[in-house]
Length: 183
View (spheres, rainbow, N blue to C red):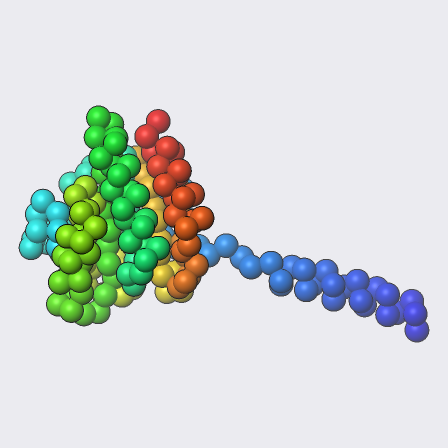
């Protein structure tokens, strides 16, 4: 009996260890992928009120694309830090934009305008994508509340967070990731 229990216990411990480790959330374009075109409504950027493709507008520049389904304190902190990085790296032509994924664009537009004004966001256009699923070719996971992709022609960094998982430590890591597109 003991010979049977020991291997069985080892099996369950090993299986629990594999199951107990959470898999990293995958969302968005993976490393090496070329980002495609998609259209957003610009709420605060240079083309405020227009529909345009910021991916197209920024072409081969180093870009931070933030895709979010909800606005909270940590997302706001991320936007502010990326805004500062863009301002600091103007000589390198760095660019960024936020895409809020929503099924109710009319309701969130004033919130984005107020957010930009309150926090003095000047270098990161806040935009809206009509539809909570996001641009189909970007493969944004439904369970990802925030997906951040950075590219310079191809995707160089990608981080995704379930609701409530974007924290100050993650924001700091994302800000550090901008170095991957500036070299």
